[in-house]
Image 1 (cartoon, rainbow, N blue to C red):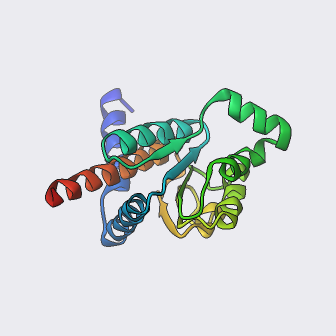
Image 2: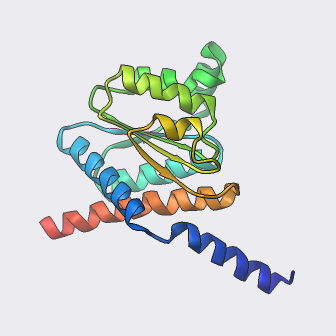
Length: 188
């Protein structure tokens, strides 16, 4: 396949994933509403991911806080991750971070391409124990993955390609940020 055809096919396949249907739109509106509700009640958003999903968590956290004016935290500091991983095991560092920083009524966003990351799955229990308002998951690969089964609102990208799933998650989350900003402009 030529480079031209590769890029054309690649971008066409990616565009199929982000093409909105009514179900996806409804889910994204539910996420937006949960985030606004938390903010209006003085609560915050905690967002987590591994690898590329951690980078997405950082980006979304900054945009949510700066642009949408909703307090959103991510925890990608090496010292926190290695401390909690050393003491509790890597599969529990997110759970322990939620225990330390989460409050009742907060929102938890968990990003995992496969939906099989044990630290993200264990985080759900911490969010439930902390009585979080909502647990939002973003996954891909198999629709019946464990993380997708555990959230209150679940966005799923129908692909087994990491870059497609991660790009789709980032687009969806930043669309929600822009949706919040747009709603605020209409209310001003």
